[in-house]
Image 1 (cartoon, rainbow, N blue to C red):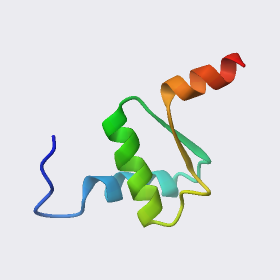
Image 2: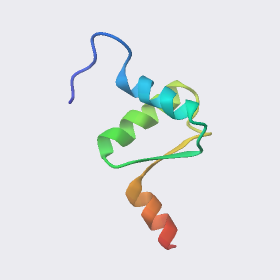
Image 3: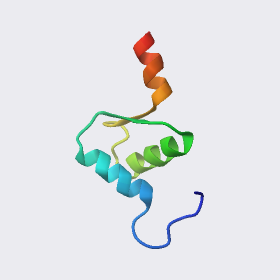
Length: 65
């Protein structure tokens, strides 16, 4: 889980590019590792302002307010 990729593209870059292609404004994740991974990917792509990365618990909290 904590090993860096040695061949191919980094997984956070691959997943972040997939998210960007979906043309969404928010992406929800269910674990702290995924949150960090996707946030880093969005920063690398310069999309952290356009696409919000949130934990699913944050979305639940927001919907209850």
